[in-house]
Length: 158
Image 1: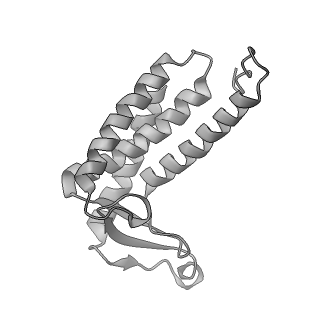
Image 2: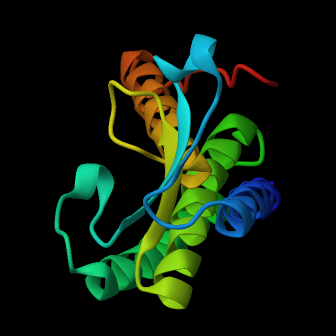
Image 3: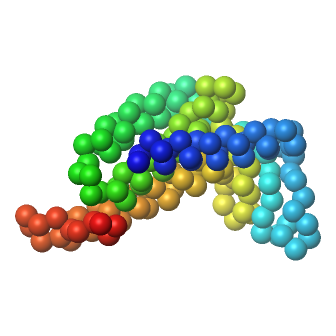
């Protein structure tokens, strides 16, 4: 399940980035209309750092970290009990997002970002998958910590 979720995330991420590459030069913004322009735009930017532009110019280091962490998360998912489907899917979100951005770093030396919600740094589908995965992973950990000692919390999906 982890690899299937990761593959879907990578496919969505790379397809949306390919579309942006076809229609917008770097720095350009696609007008979303007067009603939406105040809150949302498609804005093609490049990021050589990590989230929020931190670590600009260290793309090779982030590429290596993403590949190592992807392997660690896949191994974790493989060792998770079969009933932990939500954990496996959550790890797939993070792995898929990391791989989507790693592909960009390997191909272009930077990550293609394009979702501009005006009040947040510009991001992409891979970033969204990582963020959702991290929130779900924190929730999973919180649930596990609250389970009585020696008893595992039941999986919500089975």
